[in-house]
Amino acid sequence: RRELPDGGARPNAAQFKQLVVTALRELHGEVGAALPVDVLTYEEKTLSAILRVISSGLVKLWSALTLLGFYQNRRCAFRVLQTSPFLLALSGNSRELVL
Amino acid sequence: QNIVTVCFSVGYSAVALNHVIDFKEKKQEIIKPVSPSELFPSLPIVQGTSKRIKVLTRLTLVVSDPSHCNLLRSTSANIRLYDIIAVFPKTEKLFHIACTTLDVDLVCINVTEKLPFYFRRPPVNMAIDRGIYFELLYTPAIKDSTMRRYTISNAISLMQICKGKNIVISSAAERPLELRGPYDVANLGLLFGLSEGEAKAAVSTNCRATMLHGETRKSACGVVYTVKKPRKVEEEETAVPACKKAKTQA
Image (cartoon, rainbow over all chains, first blue to last red; front, side, top):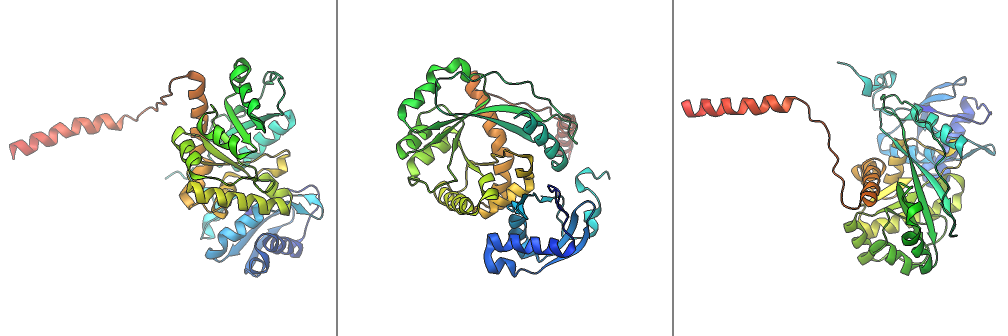
């Protein structure tokens, strides 16, 4: 799950995907941009999304998102809230789990 | 800088996720014999773990001349106010001096331009023995793509010499949007060539060790950090004699 705090621009779903691919291309080149990434959900209100990627590509994707600095000449930041191999785990915060 | 502090605290409390993050504040000075002004009152803010964010102060000396190092020894009255002292050497000789004899906690590694000197193994090993950590900044990598290349290349060359030990990754962020969460930064460590455990340590345990090293420097002999042990240990101890009795009876 990623959250995008922005300066004021609101990308829609397609632009968001484009942003992710651009970030990958800037850091890892064409090979990185070719990494298959799926946007599972995207909420325009909170600017948060759930992305899916093959596990071997996690480091590349994550580092590319971390180092992305600009979107449409405006500063932006990706905040990765949670990563997990299971979709169900994303619904809760596993650190605060009370058994 | 006040605004930045507040923004940082807000940002980290959202991202921290039950991490105890000690936020280091950087007061940067170019070398002039100016006494560092007193710390402005900073607000401790309660986080998700019901622990307050610690705000430390830190001084970075940009050293390009051996005479600058005398500042460290002479104006020690002002330097005492800082928790952590870092040195940013610009030449090979200064790097050697910083690693071997200077009384600092961190040695900053320049990431914004091609290093004018190559790392050599002896001073790096001595620094590791002395408990000095090398610091890499990641904010230039967010700003500019040329600096990104320099960051990664310098970081990789440092890794090759020091084998990933004693590395601290920190941000020189000037705006709240340039800050990244702790796990993101640990992932960047993987990019630089650290192993996974080392990358996480670069963000958490090494930073804490640097803090304690700073306290050690202040107190002039050593620091023993004690943690309360849970009561379970006592019960285990009483259980042992019972087992022994059973053995002797059997």
